[in-house]
Image 1 (cartoon, rainbow, N blue to C red):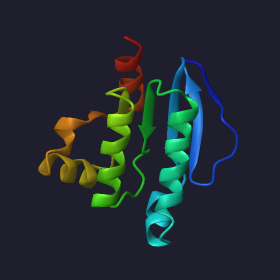
Image 2 (cartoon, helix red, strand yellow; image 1 turned 90 degrees about the horizontal axis):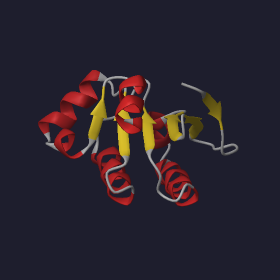
Image 3 (cartoon, rainbow, N blue to C red; image 1 turned 180 degrees about the horizontal axis):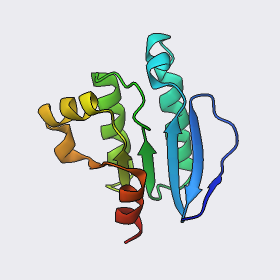
Length: 124
């Protein structure tokens, strides 16, 4: 797997490319929500989707703190629909994954334990 940084500077996300797949990591999701700046994070993601012409994308939460709230769920569902199923999510914290499973969101999204698992599913 070759991974390289791409797409310039973003305030809330880090973007790289791994084997032709856009990989997005979050700098501070919890902070964005606490500071009421989650809309900016959403706008960065939507602009990236538009820029990439809706190609495959992996959102890697890197097991960071992630509030299991409707705002995050709504964002993931909208991105999943915009990318027409080409969105993969990985490294969700255990409590967040449990929350998504409890609410049925896990059945709608392509959730993987690791980035490598998500990449393997994307490139196969």
